[in-house]
Length: 412
Image 1 (tube, rainbow, N blue to C red):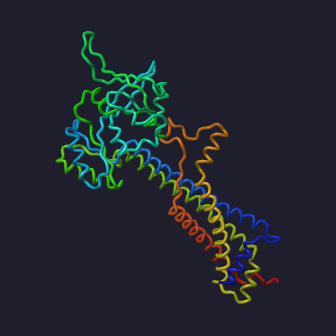
Image 2 (cartoon, rainbow, N blue to C red):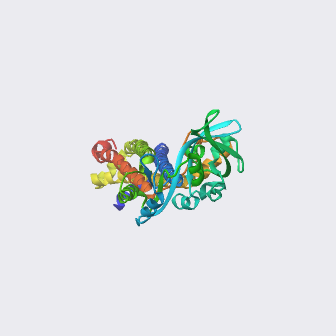
């Protein structure tokens, strides 16, 4: 293929008198490059969202839970020890969870109050990386401390050391009537998960304080951490069977299925749509090669009279088109990789420079724009682009091979 390769490369390079053809060749390269870069960046952002969503959900929730059918799980100490006998269960922690109403001054907000044992909770869901002030270790029995999200603290207008009144739907009967049960808690910690749903709604208290507030002898359930994240449904089921049944099990794939399903659907749709963008850019090569064939008909005829076969002529223009596509694809991969690896910094710079917020925390689940570049995505995008580019060269190359030397040179 040395002959076809040499002529194909010569046709790609700009030459005197062929400025327009060279210009549209450059435009075709840029089209392929931009299409590939955009697709790589979009897929990286979707991957980043999926990763961040998984990390933040599991930092606040757990891999699996075992709960009582009526909201109370008796003998939680024995059930916890039973769960830990399964070698796949790394940690287990009891919890009490219920809804409440929090108030500070004139501000009110509904919250999900979760009672935990700090020493056990750290093994199930590590909140230390999310803490901005204080920590779960500041929750002590009968200390009536509470750890809240930063959005909830801002909504209530409280900070570290301030008081929050927590009221529940159950009431106390007094001579003056039924009075809602309430307890004043001190803010001992503030966390930020980066997901508005958690930062605005959740509050953590000590398990004993939650039991006294709700007058519970039992816990709501046990939260489990397992060694294989994706085997959590099977492990939770086995733990429930080992405990004799009569419990309700759940896991992270069930609780947050809609989130991950929507991400996969979005990723598939975006991949198809942006692949069509690459296809449009690739088929710009068709118009480029058609124009080259029309301007090089005399050269083709001379090559044919010198003994070049139809296959050789086809190879010349396939080479030219493939070179255009390969250069565009390499440029697109380089640009897409560079943008994906530095996307968070670029977004931060744009937000600080123009004073805008691209992802509002009260609208989106995640307030920043994560990115995760995966080699499999880059390989797949590049392969699809090269296939489309090669397909785009076939028709113009076939047209060039059908050139008849006698027709083109009869007036010379």
